[in-house]
Length: 131
Image (cartoon, rainbow, N blue to C red; front, side):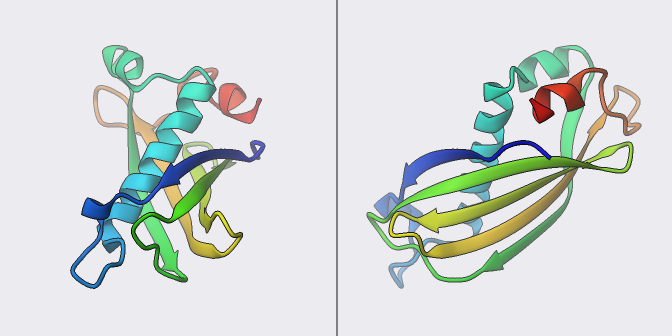
């Protein structure tokens, strides 16, 4: 499993619903942004992958909402990555408010599709994510 990666963010007003809470779909944006930043920090670029005919996809998403974020809340998103079998990568993530309160826990199962739509993990990808 990779070491813990984290990114700091802040809730923007327009991400909230009429109740003054972050809309549940926005959490997925936070989580995806953190995964992309994690990948970039490991030298993995989506655009370059696409040019090589490698297309990362989410095949399963599990989100456990614990407490709501509100406008102006500072928080961080953590990312850990591990392999599950030969063709699936699992991203364990957490959103934690700056005061240490866990707001959400998530698990994303992903793979990479080749140009023919077949799942496979490109050579060297696992090593980059494990560093």
